[in-house]
Length: 174
Image (cartoon, rainbow, N blue to C red; front, side, top):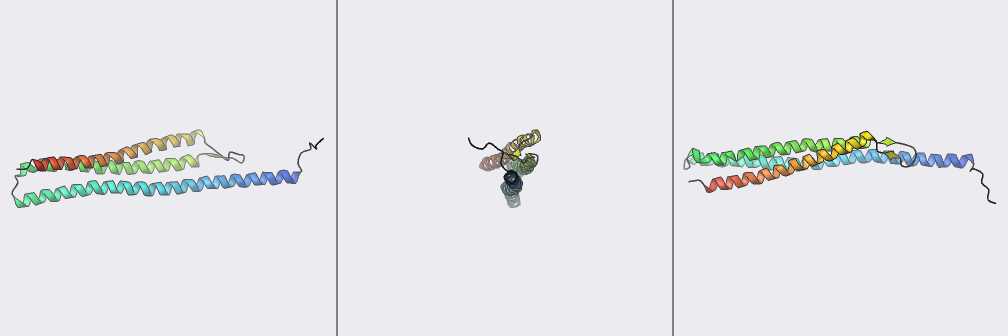
């Protein structure tokens, strides 16, 4: 009959210390992950949103320069330029949408980091457990991410619409 006695104290202590090291590694890994994801996501989102702001802002400046050139030549009546000038609204709203998307991208990253920070760390497997608060932050992150994506897409759609409006307005110039 095999020996059913509990393992010696040293063995139990050794296995407990192994579990503690594994738990600490998992905790540190989750914290590092949150920091790296937050930094990378912020960099990517800022680049994409800055590009959207630059595209719409550059289009607005180009339209203003175009209108200024037409006015300085005096060949086109001022009233005929109103439809071209009206297209500036689309570019301005595109800049606003991209800027709002940047704000929501930040809120997305903040929520993801908060999700990880608010998870419960424990010394037994699984070493990191979601909590009610961390799940709420995860839901907020998903919401903010969707709004940021919609804002970025809206900015691009507004740019394209503004370009189409300018094309149509130029086509109707005398």
